[in-house]
Length: 540
Image (tube, rainbow, N blue to C red; front, side, top):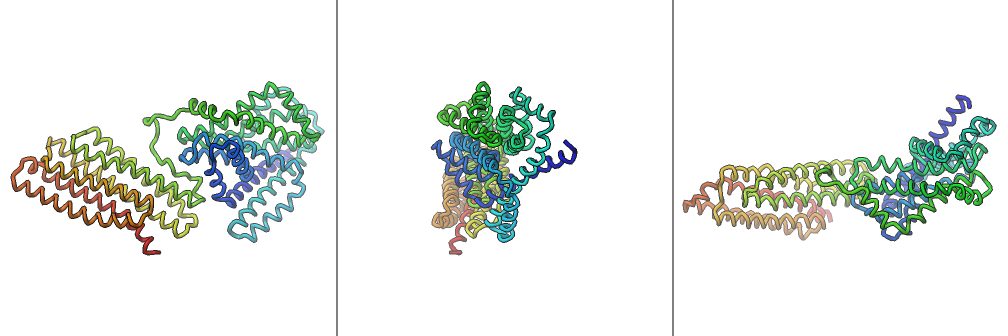
């Protein structure tokens, strides 16, 4: 093979990969939230899950893209591992559809698809028509690439040395599987590897015996996308990648001893060698699905056993629901940001609840734990805001923009409350503990009662944010005035005890009054949750 031919072949492979990516991106933009909506509709109905996986992968032109979305969704808590098993199997079937399409020599008409794609992109300018044009143009590139590779392989049919190398793949299937798996991992596409086998078969360069290890190796190599996407993900997400790898590996291990009869079966499917290669890919993935589908539940338990969850000490704290793959779908992304904000609220609520225990029991360990939790609040506040900043680059409806502002206000409020607890209340608790001070009996009860009212208001604020309820927001505003009056009464009660000369009240006076002040500050921050919600009432 000449240098020119090698460069042309390399260019053809790159064009094939670019075409697949372009087609997948176009279909993903055109379908948009529908693709993710299909995934969100996944249930424990195995056949339905397989169908959804096959459909999405056929549209995206990549099983890796589907698996990556599953890794993300499971990591974000949107889907359970068991629900994704059928989708993984379906994705493996869906990726065979592209290979089946190219066996019909559509590449002879590639230039027509190029013209249609360019015309749709030009007419569409923006919107779904342009996205469809991009997808059609991507398919056209795939066909052009296959045409180029077919023409390049044609002279090699007469090269005895090249034919001998390819024939030897059939004599040593394990070596052929390893080579094909490595090539697929390098190309990041099983379709690209099988496309090479298809064009070689079309020109008579390989036999079906030599093509079978390439097909099996390509199926193993395609797992690289799932593996890389799960790096740094939580254990739940990594299990999706592990399941995908195990499906492929176990399938190849089972079929390897029966490779000769399987090859003979494929040979009976059609007299055309190139089409036999495509059929081998399809039959292998259908066989995997039929083999594993009845055993989804025990297989899920096996994956969970092989990859257990990390302990809390090993787990790096960070966002749990902020899924970057749904940023192109504002409604889903805002829903995920809301979930993360409510998770942040749970942390702050625990901090506020436990803070009073520190004052009651002088608990130094609990004090340190509360201070550490404030760091978690700061992390979530930063990550939620960064996530919403990326979302704002997309076009939002008025309602979505309003909800985005509510989330930002809510997380900012939570961060402020966390700071008051950490930097003010806990500092007062330290001073009380260090000086071995005790509140008077009446003084402590008053602080406990006021703290309880602030806690109730906090719960009310969380409910108002979660539901967007206008009546709850008005209730928050009314409580602000009421708690302000209570705080003034409690101050006066403390001053009255000072006049009586009670030692505990005199010793803890500054701390007592500062605790009341900071609880009142927290309540004022809580009331801020209501304002963006009430703005929507004015807009209506």
